[in-house]
Picture 1 (tube, rainbow, N blue to C red):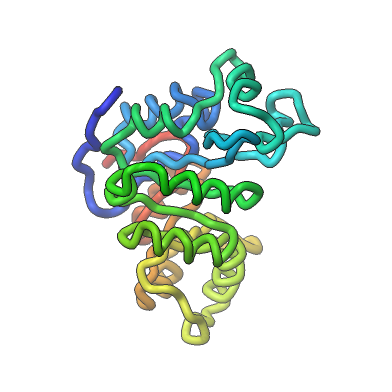
Picture 2 (picture 1 turned 90 degrees about the horizontal axis):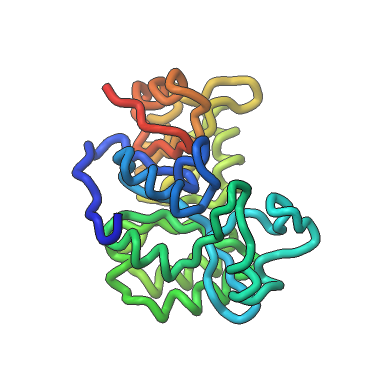
Length: 246
């Protein structure tokens, strides 16, 4: 997989692998990302945290509860200590340096976790800018971090913050689109259902797109939901299982 180039895929929808193919492999691990690349995903998504001694690690949760350490976080450990950790099944955690080398030339979606966001952004400045000019999409939980990244990587794209997605989803469900201000070009996550109502509907997606925003179908549970998102006109589909073809 080293150095492989992204496949040419249809412009819509863009398929994003959520932490890799996690139904078969440990999330944010090399096997999960390799499987996503083999499956033909356009973009691989991962989460960035920083160790106590300044190394970026791919890990989602605030604590290491999934690894049997519920009172410990990545930010408390050194690189050597993180290197000794193992996902269930025995695979080690992945550092960003390895990710950059192994998946160079592919498109990435990078979720900057707020607990170490300032340090993460500082460390990203040490990498070649060109690495983030191939369609990278960032997610930040705080506006100031998004502004910093926009200055560093002017061509990068951004997901809307989680709180924005939720409240705008409510408004879209109620048909209040004319009252909303959405950022043109920004991608908004839309769940399959909200308050018991289906959101993977053409009229819902069209309300976002009419304002220049992009729709991310967020974690469809199965092929039925994924096909519904495709039929409704999703710009992107974020999934942790596979790609629906045809």
